[in-house]
Image (tube, rainbow, N blue to C red; front, side, top):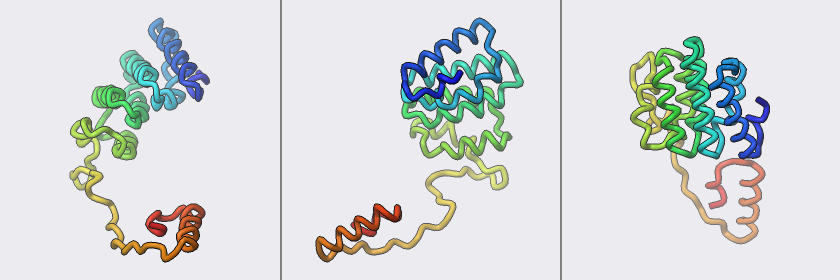
Length: 178
């Protein structure tokens, strides 16, 4: 199970394939792999992430008690760069998740900005606020935006170097040296 967190993609893929074989034989304890699947769900390799989602689905299909935790774990795959992986994660969340689960809704809201545009419509029902009933979207900021400031060019090379150094050291806004 420790190989799921490997930084080497083929090792991670091998671990997921081995766990799938064990799970299909019915010998994998459901809770054993649930917490350790997060790195595989976020893997760059599409096959690895889809295999990890299959593990979650097998676990949820086998035991009804695993539905909520499988749906919650699937939110890790919403961060994938592959729309197919995100779609499979949404399939699992829609099948096994409960819209009244606050932990699931929070996890989905936290990853919503990384979900591909083609899946936004499927995500909207999960982003609705329980209190207001209105969807939480990226279009409406939670806090008012700061007033824009004019960007002035550096007067000379020395000032440009000073501004660049300050921007690198302070990790502030990059607008200062523009």
